[in-house]
Length: 242
Image (cartoon, rainbow, N blue to C red; front, side):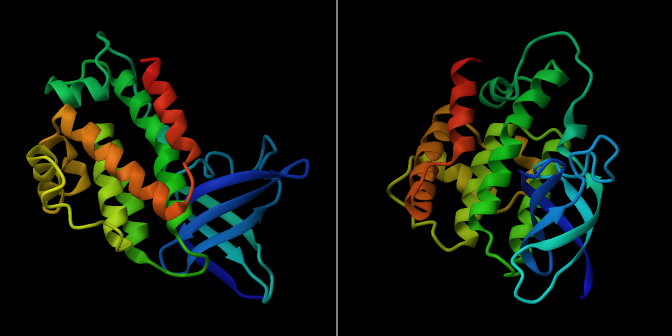
């Protein structure tokens, strides 16, 4: 029964029994895995803090032939979205306000709260697109780069449009958009091809163009997945209350 060590992105967890969790995680070299983390729900569990969605972790797991679930032996957080939460300062500018107005965010906690709202969205999209046991290092790198960019203070909404664009592009389902999108939206996509996600704040992110791309990307995602993401509905509900 081989034991594997890998860098992984935690995508989702489910309760199992009284104290365990099923963990869905994406490895760099062996694709998506589903495993059982025994005792993960106990207060003194060695998995505490390492199983949040989009956490990048070092994991050890073993698997048996013809078994769907692997056994997750160990997980240690490398970088966690929980680390995005910073001390509050004065002001109430959110990341979305800053991205559309060009103003610098005045409140770290407001920006962080906005960013954290997208963590589950990124993780759910990766989970839906990643294939079981099918290695795709590009997908892994894309997910890890989102966590790095959020930690570097990249504005969440332009980053989300950037992520959707590259995810759809990597999967070969982004259509030729010339002539169907506005000039502002096309400028955003062109810049996204040359800038890394940590520089999302430099993208030409006009509010109207972001809304346009959001609608286009949502339609493409729903068409190819044949469903609406739960995290997308949550984001829209949060926006209504902001």
